[in-house]
Each structure stands twice: as structure tokens, then as C-alpha cells.
Image 1: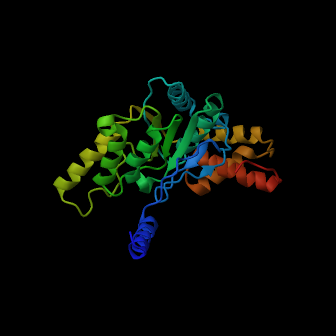
Image 2: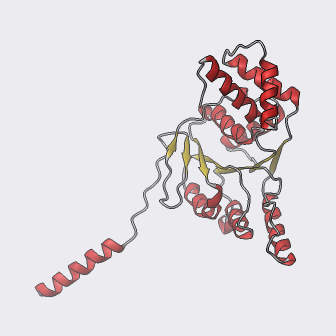
Image 3: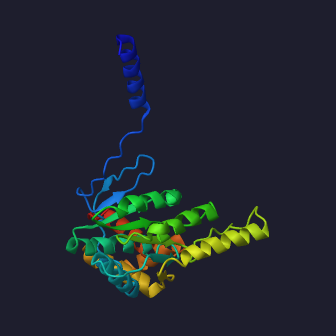
Length: 279
């Protein structure tokens, strides 16, 4: 081979190396318990531990018990079900999923939680393929899931949960929270024909059927709301003689009673009294 040919081949090799996609790095799940998935970069940035203790979530004892039991079975490698936490906003769906994980995880070092964005449902099948090959066990959490983009997102999620010819990954538990039981947006049929809307609805309802465990969160009544406020106040040593009256006034201004509203009232009270709270 003459020098000219050698130089030409070297330049071609350099050019191919520059345009070749980067070699995918094996994700490192040793740095933390909680991670976020970045589908663009294929990365898993670590997140800090969730600070809210499970026992601070009051008024949802039956929901806590069912979720923790299913999660513990999964962590032990026993049969378990994907979970849909559904109900009115502010009732503790997202908090329960993360607080329960933090309560169970110390007993199972291989248990990890990966949070995915609700707008990235289409990235779930390749994500599940990556996790399938790992030794760890993963809770994949999608908060406030709904199919605003219609049947395409629903099909992607169904594909991830079913796993194609390989079957669903045994080491992945999918948990979704939603304000709607069947995950459909309220304006589902707007701008679409009746047949197309009906077909999309059937696709989306069929996805909700893939969740073996549905846990409902009803609206919080006044007694449960005040119990939540008192529990928070006692836990963090917040004393004021008119606690319940002020808590009810706060809820009236917000136009709702929920665990979230109770926590927001407690944060306001803690700020007034100069006390510290978890983030």
C-alpha cells in the first residue's frame, strides 16, 4: 500500500469515528436510591432521598397498607402487580409512592426508584429493556400520568408493560399516579370523529387494565383534614392555641381540603413560628 492510499484510509477511518454514535455507557445505580430518567441522553441522574416520612401521611391508612404490601412482595422477588394510584388532587398519591419506597428500601439494597416524566411515555419500552438486563429491582414511577397525546402514548405504555415476545421484565414494577381512573384527558373527544375517539378511548382503557392493583384516594373530609394538621403540628412541635380554626380558614381560602393543603398550612405556620421542616 502506497503512502497516498494509507493517508486516504486513515482520513476515512477518522471521519467514521467522528460520526459514529457514542458507545452507550452502562448506567451506575450505586450512588443513590432515587434516580430520574433522561431519555434524550440515556442517563440516570441521581436524586436525593425523599424526606417525608411514611407515618406523616394520615387519613390513607388502607391505601398505605395495600401499597407497602405489594411493594414489599416485589422487593422480595415475589409476584406483585403494577400499581395505579388514582383520585382527587392533593390526597397523597405521589407522596405515598415515594415515602413508601423510602420506608421499604433500607431492607433491600438492590431496590431502586426511577422517575420518568409523563411526557416521555414513548421512551418506556427502551427504558424497560435497559433495566431488564440489570441485577437491581426497579420501581418506575410516572407521576400525573394521562394520555394527552391519545392512543400513541397508550400503545407505548402497553408495549412496555407487556414486554413483547420477551414478556414483561420481572425486575420492574411500574407505578403511576393519576387524577383520573382511566387515564384519559377530559377533552379527549374534542376535534376528533366519534369513531376515532372511541377507538382511542378503548386503547387507553385497555392500558389501565394492565395495572393489577388500583388504589383509590377519595376527597378528604374535615375530620381527616384536621387530623392531618394535628399530626404534622405534633410531629414538628408547632404550638398555637387556635390551630384548628386557622387550619379551617386556610382550607376555606384554598377552596379545598387535602393532605397537600394541610402540609401547606403547616409550612406557613412553621415559617411564622421560626421552625424548620423537611423540603
